[in-house]
Structure formats: structure tokens, C-alpha cells
Length: 284
Image 1 (tube, rainbow, N blue to C red):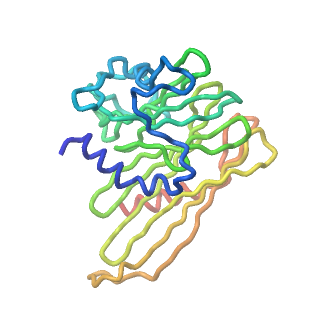
Image 2: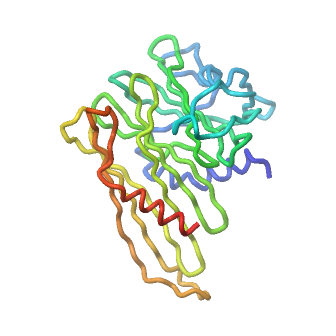
Image 3: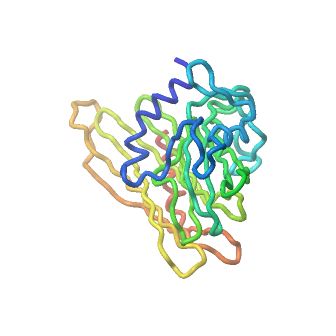
């Protein structure tokens, strides 16, 4: 089965998970040929071509192009792989955000598999569309095979700034791996706050799922605190299996990120999520 078709099927499976509250959907998926709000003569395809210069529709309405522009990886120079030689996508996630009190537009392009890495390749692009559209920054945010905005897409940390939530994932027959980057914008550049690693299992005797929730808290700093809570729940499946079914159990693991003026960066108040990631890795 073609990779792009697999990605489309995965996106359909993930929709209820990615967008749990229809009324709260901040991310949209406009047609590439539709006009950018406030610009009758500029389309989303024009914005996309700032990242993939030769992107064009094929006879089936799918968009294909060659290599994207050079971008850094959100984790740093030692992370990520090379982009695919040919890119293919039907649309891109679009999100309006605040950054430093300015209106900005963010688009997320999942370009497919990396040419030299098990991870995919997904470009997160930051635009200024208040005047003549301008590409301000672009980074590769893929840390697994398929990449999307994660609900809620953005978190308001003050009246003038939003933090972004994306996710990269892959699945096998009984396991799901999810990595959730928290990303902020400073001086019109993307900066990584942290990565949150979660792991789901669906076995014969039981299922175990780790859901992530976000909350922003005003704490007197220039940017509000971000509380991340992972609910780790085990539920028996009620099947007759060789393995004994565990007792139902659920507990929450929370970490709060506070803005540090000295480092101009968010700092977490515990390593609880790092410990969870380590425990999960033992179950792979």
C-alpha cells in the first residue's frame, strides 16, 4: 500500500483522538487553492511554495513537489533525517497564533518518509500575513513517522503569545507510540520547550492508554505556567486470555513548566514525565 495512502488512513483513524471537542478546533485544513484571509490574490498554495518551491497539483488533485527548502530540526542539529526527494500531500494544517503580540499564521506540512531516517519529515512554517506574506521561520518537527497538530493545537500563555502542540506517532498491531513536542515562538523563531513521550498498548487481557491534557496557569511571570498531565489508565478487556487480566487502575502524572527569566526558557518542576518515558521504554 502506498505510504501516502497509509498516512491518509492513519489520519482518519486519529481524527477523534486529535480533535476531541469539535467546537474547540483551532486548526483548519483549507484547500490549497483557497485564498488566505485578507488576501484575495494570495492562496495557501502560494504560502506552501515558500517551503516547497515547485509544489503543484497533479491530475487527481493531490499536490506533489520536489525537495523543500533547507530547515533545521526543532531538537537541534543532531536530530532528524533528510527530506524525501519528492513530497506529496493533499493539504496542510493551518493555525492562527499570537507571537509577541503579533498575528502570525502557522502551517504544518507532513511531507512523508525521511530518505535516511525511520522518522518522517514534517515542516512547521511560521508566516507573517498581515501585509505581503513572508516566511519567518521553518523547522522539521517530525520525531516519528506521521506528524500532526495535537489538540488543542495551541495554548495561550498570555494575551500576546501562544505555545504550539504537535505530535508524531506510529502504530503496530498492539502498540501506539506518541511524542508530543511543546513549541513556543520567540522573536519570530520556533523554540522547543520539551518532548512528552507516551505509549499505548492493546493486548488480549487488557488495554493501557496514556492520555495527555494541558492547562495554562497565570503565575506572575511574563509567560504563564503550562501544566501537563498524563493519565495512565489500565482497563481489562474482558477476554479469555492466557495472561491474567490486571485490576483496573488509573493514575495521573503531572509536570508544570514555569518561565525562567534568567534563561529565557521554560523549566519543568520535576522529572516525572522523563521517568514515565523510561518506564514505557522497558515495555516496547
